[in-house]
Length: 115
Length: 160
Image 1 (cartoon, rainbow over the protein chains, first blue to last red):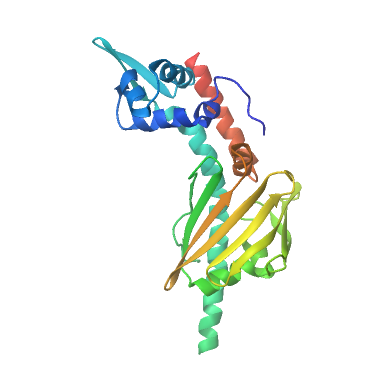
Image 2 (image 1 turned 180 degrees about the horizontal axis):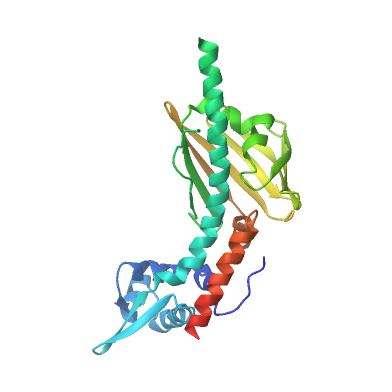
């Protein structure tokens, strides 16, 4: 299925490497934009642009703390991406459970042959 | 009752890779046999999603494999590839193409880790691009993607 190329798409938002780095940094705790810029070695306007995309899809929230604005991750918005990978995992787990049954039979045959 | 050996974990080590890891409660030679014998592959490869119509395995370097699954009488899906490397009881490297997306050829490295009575399988699937990797994740799980998109829509609406 083709994914819609819209800014309101979590998949597109996390498809960009720098934005995933920002999410990784924010996963460790909330931070102001300048700290993110320093950690990534980017100029603040660039980081602000990425944060804007992440905020638009709900992956990042912001709050005012005195004179600073602190950004944090909103993990529930990542659920679609998580579920997508989980679906693939489920397919393989179905295969592996059947493979378990095949292996049990092979082990039984080996045991019988040794007796 | 098959002995359960834990669950598969899927991770995305890079933009173009998928890594699947799973342990089995059987020694390497048996896992190897179940993985490479057509009659045995037929019994597990479709999971709960249908029936394997055919499994062809020409098990030598340069040899071809092709699996066809009929999904509950609704449609058929086929995968094929070529074996690039076979190290008995250790490693199989092969290409894999979903015949519905013939341009998205993946390179798959299956590593069989000997844990004595148990085996850990590590499947590293590598694509040329992220787009193809994402397509691979989507193959064979139409329902799952739809659910994910529905949830995405809900998230978008809740933001509006």
